[in-house]
Length: 501
Ligand SMILES: [Cu+2]
Image (tube, rainbow, N blue to C red; front, top):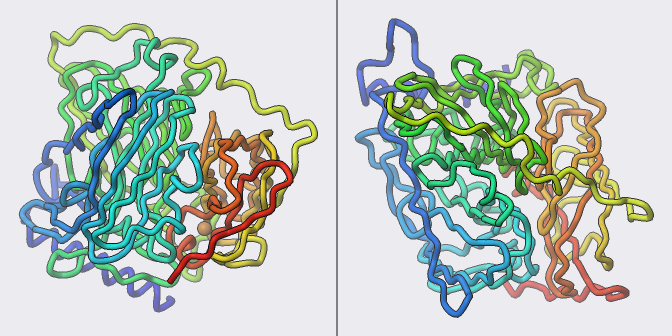
């Protein structure tokens, strides 16, 4: 057994001891409960909905990054970071076509950046590693929302520090609305039948603080799952139908999500918006940063639990003592859901069609083709270099990107800024669970697999600021598994302004 594995086992033991100290009752109905189920469930926290202020047609938001604390475990105060609060952040909402301004004041004692994951916007407003916000400073990105309704999110992106900043609790949702989505009769009452579910994980020190030791293979992979910032929570539904917006905000962990009774449910949206039609499934795999919106129907008074269930195929990673354990076979109870009262009305038929425009893939005739080979911490044999622009895109059309995970026993999760893509094919793997439906911005790559992506980019030509493409397993990103591209006017050369340090 490797040293790394032993150390993880030790931390798991520490967390179990801690949980035991919190509440003696660690079993229910005689069955051992998974980690994080150490006490009676608390109500699911719902991050406050934040629509900013509409001033002369411009939606203006204001947010701080700050240190604080949270009761992640009941009765234990853990030091955390948050947006305009102690932990996580408000759920932003804006509408397609609106102009958006955000004032972000950094009240932390170190530099960070804030990235709008999934948003098509100018590179200077994207919040990547070239947009540092120093302590005490305010950064004010502006853009026009010009993309379909979707469940996006925001999180830090400072060079080599992203994993830690996210782990401490800097993450929030950013919902985009449009007329297509509004006209479908989908649940849309935030916190009532339209529920944000942010899944992350942490590991604790013996005194209940965040264990920030970064493992060289697993980074900050936690052993205790959190939903909207706490362990062991319950949502009391008041309607028979829920739209659940699932975000995997974990830095390293993949979740294969299902309900405790294996009930079927419908996926209605992927990372970048609605599917063409609902897809009935009984489980869905979410890698770090991926999102889906699902519709789940409930009977009055019933109890069902959203779970993370192990992947029998271990995501194509060999099992055994000498193989790294990324947690693909771990099982967790994440969120208990209780059905509504008997008087809750029956929901209408789910529409057979959602967004027909989401069906088509880009026309790739004559499109440039690029290849990306992911291996350990490198892309195409190179580590991230803040001063290097890997390539430029000087046209408005789509591109065909081929992305290969060359590792035999590591997962990767490929994300592109300022873009959405269709997964045209996923080959070289038997793992059928990878989520490939609809428009996406992040795709999970089992060992040996190759994904062909038809990519569309936002068009905000700027030859001074790059966008990132990277692995969204945050240890990998921080270790250099990232590159930079620019979107420039035809024929323009990059003129990257070096960061002053
Ligand atoms: Cu990776």
